[in-house]
Amino acid sequence: MEKAFERHDHSECAGQALARADELAAAQGLRLTPVRRRVLEILLEGHRALGAYEVLERLAAEGLGKQPPVAYRALEFLVEHGLAHRVQRLNAFTACQAHHDAGAPPAFLICRECQSVAELDAAALRESMAQQAAPSGFRLERATFEALGLCSACAEAG
Image 1: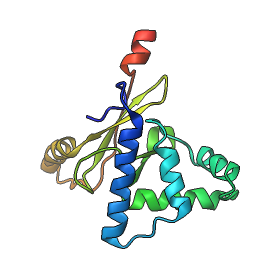
Image 2: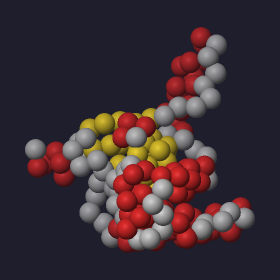
Image 3: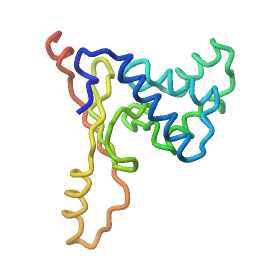
Image 4: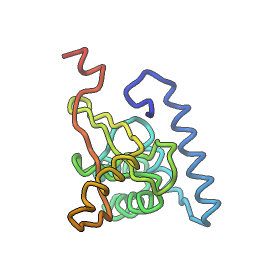
């Protein structure tokens, strides 16, 4: 599991995620424009999900765009290429921090107090769900796994 809920050198995991993004862009011939890269950097500043308008405010403050499509297009690109995820429960986005295979389904642990988000590899969860659904003839195509609870820091504070 990633380190979202643990004390750690966040610059190291953010740097690794940026390096993976650069590698992916080079390998797939993707264009990581300055706005797309900056949006990824913003998402990587912490292990929490940010709404599109929070991202847009940051971009506008930095002179990188004031219109919602600027943020939405960059976020859509990052999600489409596995560099970020949309967290449905929060209607927000988080940078991909997992080290699982590209295309593997993620699961999210969301702290209801501080909004921190940890990402897990959900391949086993998806497989279990598909096996349980199969006898009814249902073929699972896509699943979203989001769990709400308290991180250790918030649990200790409460």
